[in-house]
Length: 247
Ligand code: CDP
Ligand code: MG
Image (cartoon, rainbow, N blue to C red):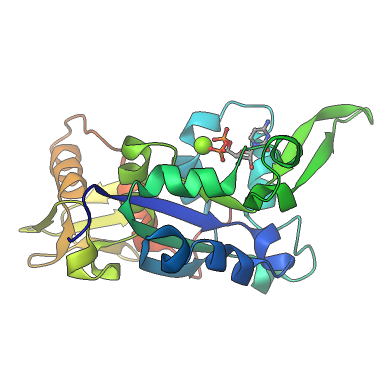
């Protein structure tokens, strides 16, 4: 690649960005002309529970997590239009991609964004009180238009969580791939190396997969611990399938 310190980062356009027709604005802010970053991959996806829990594993125990899922799943912005409940997932590639996008996005809280960084993308977001069962306020939900990876470890985990290698042009793949020499099937949270009725084939001999995914599948199929969970490997292969559970 011609750039000095190319990085990759995952960005999600959240349902509020779509509902408020801000997709064009956000993409203009992130255009190659403005940022020097190159769009490496893009997809429209319905958020599954598997994906949401893997993506936001660090927040699973937080009080705002259920409300965050309602928001990301599109139930808040499209209560009566389930077909419009989706996210746009993007991979950007280029010098200091992670920090550049985080800087353009601004602080997590739209209120802080407006105060501290007028003009940043999240300054257009909304802070919404989340009620508790007794009519009080449980917490606040940050509807902040986009997600972007926080650091290089998160970026690697998130790009490989949302995208298969063949969804990224070969010269724009930022992480090692490997050719599978075995079959791996997934069904209901279980891994198998022989076909399972109704199961999804994660990899067959000759398929190109993320090297880290194949290492995890190999270990898990032998009952060994792995560096990533089966859910993290499988989620992208199950995206947008009709019978995949909503989150
Ligand atoms: O997105 P970012 O990395 O800036 O923030 P985070 O702390 O990793 O939180 C992930 C997402 O959870 C945020 O972008 C918010 O949408 C949501 N959140 C929330 O609703 N309320 C909070 N107090 C913190 C985060
Ligand atoms: Mg974060």
